Image (cartoon, rainbow, N blue to C red; front, side):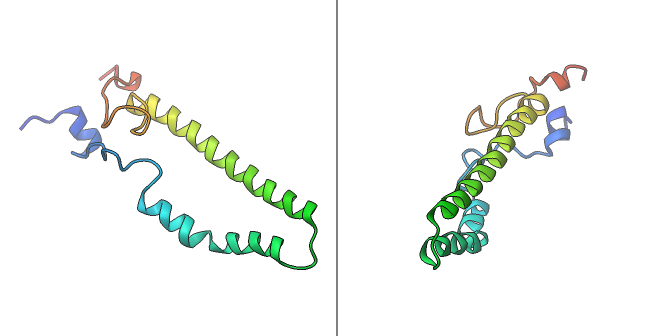
Length: 108
């Protein structure tokens, strides 16, 4: 039995071939269940009384800005980690599966 570096690092697991990325079960759970209070809050801003459209739009823009900042920052961090430690971009953007072409593995 040959023990390769890939076996040691990845324990026999390979790319998920299309499941990595947005449409996983966790994504549906977060958007369909966890964020329900946020949906209710935003709807109540626009449906409730007293109404102040300027404040409502300001609140929505804050929510969108904070969410975009978190998602874009995590996307950039994910790309950096993937290139440095795994030798390439993640599945939806790059090839499927781990790569041994990473600079961190150059000394092994």
